[in-house]
Amino acid sequence: MHPRAPHGALARLAVLAGVVALVAGACVGPLASATPIPAASDSKTEARPVVTFSSVTVTGPLNVVLSAGSTQTVQIEAPSNVVALIRTDVSGTDLAVTIAAPGFTSTKPATVRITSPKVTSLSLTGGASGTLEAMGQALAVSVSGGSTVRGIGTVAQLSVTALGNSTAELGDLSADAVAISAAGGAKVTLRAVKQLTGTADGGSVVTLVVTPVAQSVTVTGGAKVVGP
Image 1: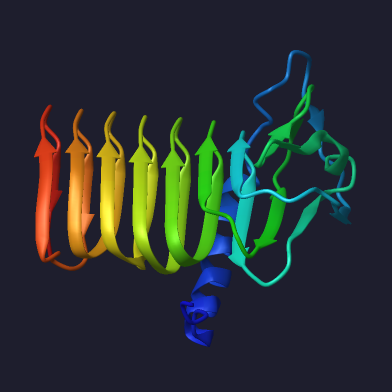
Image 2: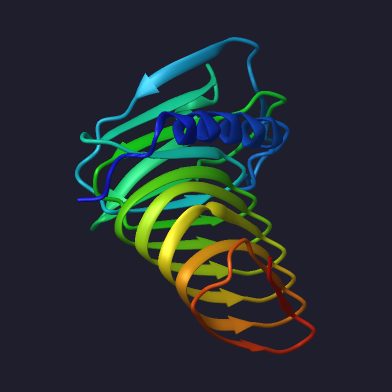
């Protein structure tokens, strides 16, 4: 079993979550077919009972904080009239976090806090922002559509897909083996300790904070891999 992240790492996760919350708070719900509603000035916190899940998919300008823990919890923190618009539905083993029509406008962040002992996949799209604490054997992270993810922790195997001007800042997430697929102007920071494989295309930039023992990345289309 991998050790829990040290206190300092948890503190960094809290700081990162605050940063992305400020960014997400200025966004407009993208799933609206009618005029988005203005967010109320007061806030509300609501716990969501959900069945067991092992992956999380977030669509739209929401701030998501995913933490490793011994129990599974899902909690919404948002303006009071926005909470009901944030959907948390489990299909199969995937928790889908979305914004219902007509969406909303807000200068305050709408945050979904998720704690789980077994999430192995996190996908962010449509301008979502996320922070994660990962501890375990394997993790898959995907960002697209201008989304951003930041992470800390330790995993044995890490798979990262970054597309469409998205950003994956995973320099504090240590992995023995990393598989990367980056394209469309994506920016990715990695800590691959032993092995790095994959592709970088379309002007994407992959930054390594340490030099892996073995590296095999196919670089095309003006992309680049830069090292420490």
